[in-house]
Image (cartoon, rainbow, N blue to C red; front, side, top):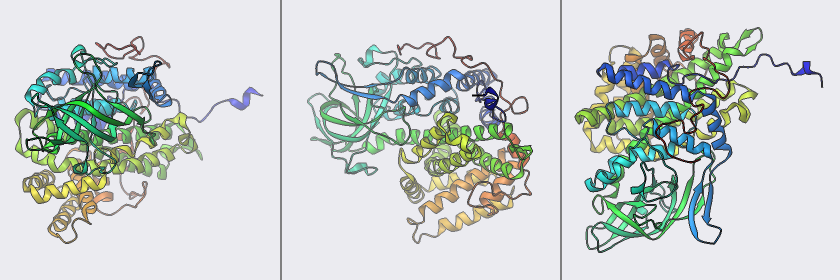
Length: 584
């Protein structure tokens, strides 16, 4: 075969060896904005922390770990060679390396650090772009902390392990490990999102707070974890009813708790991560919170994981946008680079608007968590009550069509696995389903509107900070108020109402904080009705070039600072984190 027929031209170079954090103007500006009141030492520490993680996420090594973890999905080992039940999940070494870096960077440690939620959300955003699946146990472990605080004794025992920066794989008593991971098991076959239909039973033992569980869970997240929060129906002389429990995987004496993994789910995406069906049959558990108040106990965990769904989807959107812009910058057709051609520029600008709106909203929510934690702000707490399900509904819904459009920007190159876009597309619907699908979120917003008027007041005060700055935003706020005042058929209109709330909130944030070209384009297309149903239908009179330029990788002409394959900040450190103890 003639070598000349294989000369490669007009192909985008690999997007590798770049700083995922430092090259993202929207993300870096957002972090700096919310840290504006912090002291210089903290700001410097956060920049160093996120910059190191960003360079690691953009390295060839991290990209290879992501590929390996997804091409070698977890395997269920129910028995050992002698027939003993072991119920273990075996992962590729790349999975452990990804987790090691995540834990070592503090992505399970938000609750006790200054600006903890903001820096953790930004880190989760950055590291998720290397590989999204391992974010499940990271998210569950982080979110378990507020639920466990319903029992101060349990929190004192478990919180230091959950927030540790040390990752140790393998099943051992939690007291023998420097750091642990948590999972969750709530849903059952007959109930789904309706957890009050759960039939898993909890029988009280003589020892206070101890129970034995019997039942089956249809979805158990992160089944390799050291502990789990589980909902079950308590049957005792006390209050009884749906209750939250902590189920350790290994008991303090070293024996394994009854935790029969029946099978792993064969999922559309999220292939690196395990989700399982699990059987409890006399499984020892410790009650968390009061009997009959399981939903109230676990709701803070659910809210935290919902925020991670927003952050994770925003991260996927940013990565899809980055790949599309990078391709268009280097690929030429019909005599010009794609990024210079008016119609492609329109598509890229539209994708950039969606990404910036999602990122800005995610960071605003994380900053609100810090305000609640640091000063117990009732205003921010009320805002989160309605803004989290609103953002969860809308941002996660927008992820899939955006990733699909970004894939199309690469044409046939984007449709092949080597581009990474198919993996991203398969992952994109997950966050809209996990932790309550679209209808659950929309109805939760209605519940807040009806029962907690302070939540609506906080929301309106937030969006009202931009009132008078853009006539289209003002008109959209007025229309939203009219919509909210009409209670007829409100449940059937819930998605419509929540969508408008999300767009008004995003519009307000962008009008206040984004460059004029971005805010103008968002308000025109999302609030003013001057845009179509598909991406790439922005008014041609807008400053689309400025919007696209903002989305490019910050640096020399938008080009990444490349390093040789295999080099980068992770080379020579198998875990990618220190201190970390594990043996892939």
